[in-house]
Image (cartoon, rainbow, N blue to C red):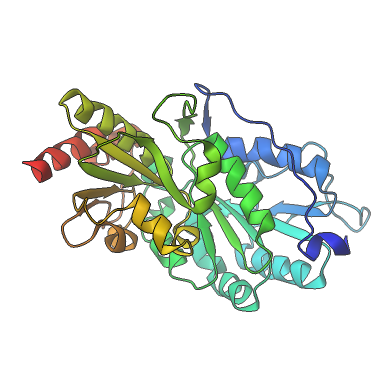
Length: 335
């Protein structure tokens, strides 16, 4: 146990997800947890009364209780702050790796405990699902809008928003290796296609370890499209539309802004070269996080108001988080 907490994490094996499959990233996270629980007996999971929705319990895990002190899964009840505080205590004890789940919007209740974890520099992993207006019919009370920006603003907190199942698996690996601070996995309710990374212009998943990378790329790109999570699919579709017009495009997936910001200036300049000032970012959330990447001549397509109650497809259309919106913005910028 002691060896793992001292940054000597054993080699973790997670099976790759096949291209063409479609999973909500909360579901792919659940599949990863199944594999991790078999390899890390000191992994302590839990959820604030949302286990089936968060997909946080592995089949091999048993519930912790007064009668089962060896249990590795905790049912916290509807106590988000209590859960986050208890996870801090588990991490500070040493030898154990705590993770806990709830809906992303309920991170509001946990914020002070999350901030303390960041201040103390301890390894705690938050699994926060239903990450955007994509949760649909539950309405604006359950739809996070400002939450990505607010958590990204906390020093020493690493926020991951994976675009597909393989980025989700990589995010888990990076979170487990992060022994100097807490990590947040921000995951979708809706299904997302697993990117075909065998294509000529698609990057290998390992490149996501740098936080941001060109997930799909043309050689002489005229414009850069950026996104995280479910909106990477939208950016890729917009690229395909622009390619038909003879416009070459780079699509950058931001798995983690914090990790990207810690990369060398050389890598940052290579990914987002100064020569290409035409840049568009798209995210189904507050636009605040993106301006340092798009620059003064770029554009951010986001949501700067509360959501509504409707199927997620209609909401994305209503709020302009679509490939057509990105395509039209790009054409206007290039004209």
